[in-house]
Image (cartoon, rainbow, N blue to C red):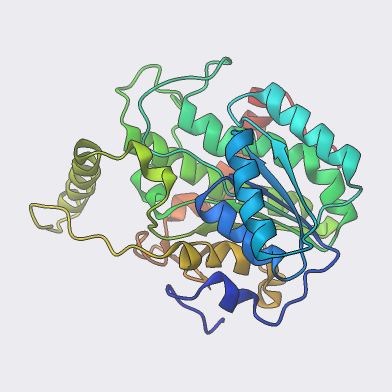
Length: 327
């Protein structure tokens, strides 16, 4: 496979590529991985559509990209992934402005936040990380087909190992809310989405991939506290002990990636020719992940690769957002 690894950066992944004439839509671009992805792809000639909830922050981020890449074809648009109305309005604006889309990177997300629901009653991490992106992707599919060969990149996480998708109680109506379990469930949903989207669209020239970017210090972790870190470790330790393993009494030191390295795998997923014909795969460290391997590194849980679960989640998601795939 690729000669890249966990330290590979966006510029190294995109070295030698020409993205001129390609329309690239990215969510969560006001900071962090989304902003770095926009900058890196713009530097290779990509036409960038930057989507974020905060108009002010997104405009400031766009100004930074314009300063670093003079003459870039770049636009900003507002999207609130917790609001289906906002997602629909954003998608409508994109489709009115652009006949085709070559790459869609569903990068935005929230992590281990306190319990809340959106106006439709969906748990916040589920709707922010999965359902909002599901609806956006479905609505933009006609333009992606016109851009074929096109790619959709879905940001998952090694934290999907915290939880399978709970089809019986996805919104924590009947079970105690655990922010890590909710986050893990949403990240499993991301991987299952990419698997099923690819199955449905690959014969139309649109491939999808899910990505574990690694652990990076960005605004995604703004809800992290010592308590939530201990909750994560307690959950991991309980699972290890249940399988006969043992762990130290305290969480180990975390090896953080730089933002440039963290965004590299999604740039690789969006552009690497060696991934042709491998749609639906889960990627980490610019490599195809190992099923059953360590999810904190380059592994993916078998339940995140389950085609039956992916189809079931797809049908439920269509019903939840009130939108079926028309392609």
